[in-house]
Image 1 (cartoon, rainbow, N blue to C red):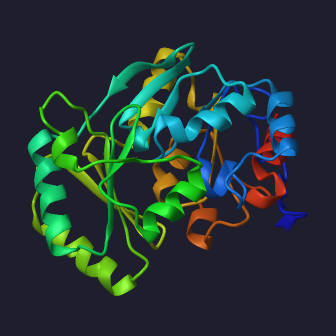
Image 2 (image 1 turned 60 degrees about the vertical axis):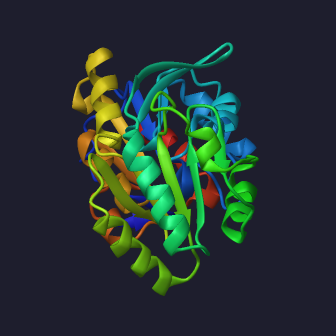
Length: 283
């Protein structure tokens, strides 16, 4: 039963008070519709005092504002698990990374730019976001994340296999084109990659081992955490593995019914400080 946006416990939550680490998705979960952590949400999260790891498809630069606002010091997970890192004094202290094979990246960029010239095409290394031109999709992403891409021909950037690429991102708002694009990219049969649609407009390619669960496994192992001592907040299909790994899966009110079905708790929406509110209920 749900009251005021939250599942009634009915005595089933026996792990309240022992949560030692929290994992949280960003878009649609921690961030509101303006793409930021509200002041009231940040205050509630800080009040909890529990170490938090953000688990996101975003690049570290796109996670930095939220990390700073929340004062997080625990390891963080970017690029859907392709990067595990800690915020450092002068950037990111890399703990573990999985980058896409150089030949796979160049093959993908060349093929998509030729066959889908209207698709917004960009890629990320550890510190920068690259695109060869400004498009509608690029402007949309820049507005969402507050980041400014480096405009450069990919051939001038990817001059050596030593250049790490964590993610290739394609954006189209045409759903028919998205279907054709997905089939095309899968048809390239690139080695050791994961291909995933995010929302309705994004198609992202990362290393095959870039899974949110990899980062969570690492943190639970190094921190010697028991499952019952962990909680996670999410709203989307790509959050399901994370939600199923923890003792207290908390799902946002704005999530689809299939995602809510795995939650032990349904908290308020991302526009109602759902993460901060949920933390207050489970701690």
